[in-house]
Image (cartoon, rainbow, N blue to C red):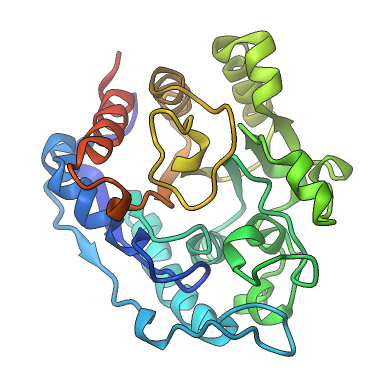
Length: 301
């Protein structure tokens, strides 16, 4: 594996501007307390980004139809600068959210450094248009936004729309297709985004699916790629500490295998971990399980 542990830079970015202030902002604290920083053995201090969570509003912006678009844009510019600086040092960025809207800052920041792909592991497509979103939360629109679909305030930071092209995106572990269709969301299957959903993983197995994902990545003409891991991609039975629940999902073993094999490509710029809510994990055992899964992924082999 080409990632040197002393070059891993943990960035705590616990923004809830794309969701709501009900616990996911505690994710970095919980995983670090469970031993993530110590067991990764990085010698770079954790970078704690100041959040704008106190400016959260539950009212939709009338122009964009989103919650907190201006505040989220401001935070995304700050996070994007941190990501660009980390990439400039050729360090591996390990970003702890927060909600999935942190992806706007990550991908817009990478775009200032070159052309990057995205492997998006999430139970949800996150492809809603603001007008179809039942909540206005950008956390259910983020993949649409980073691929250029949405209001310019959030899709065109640094005049760099789209932050990632459809043909450089792979979506893994979706299981909300019926729900998304019910609410009238755009269908991710109508794009050139590659999709490896939970049904396919169940049919073919994680090893075969991972081989296909890596083959796709190897065909990209990019400077690197980002891995986004939403913990709601894990089965509810092992990780109920998330905001929105669906049947099915990845096991810890499947997630660790997939992440490890992607790391072995040697071309991953970083990883983001989002949506885990420590307030739903009072004894800390889920935080420990997620942390140990990530450590296995980074240590195996």
